[in-house]
Length: 195
Image (cartoon, one colour):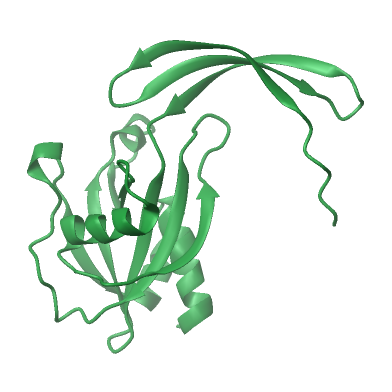
């Protein structure tokens, strides 16, 4: 399938509705339609920056390091809110690789010297500007250098989990892992390493 060339999009107006941890803005855009006309749309956009995530895999033990932390939006949907995820965080002005090396140490206590870049993905492009860079690194789980658990000053309260890759993959179908970035990385790991 050949991709059609991009159709021009013009931002007509941008209004900040709210700005603290997130930046919520209302944009009015005009774009070319498939039929050759023009269409004007107004959308609320949530911007809190780009992020990075990493799958930490121990090939000797065939296990992954995951974290569990509170995510308030799932609570609004009637879910538990304590999601199991791959380590991740905002770039905060760093390049994606530097950011994920920092986040891996802060959240899990594992110091990684290098990580393999996999791909970038928009997790919810209908309303979020966030682009997530995905990485993977092999580790030895017996060589943890730090405490992990997140930064207290950021309100982080992170539990570190070592889970066999097979069990982690089965947790997706069981509804125990519902985070999109984690599902994507676990599927990648199963394709790369097998069960």
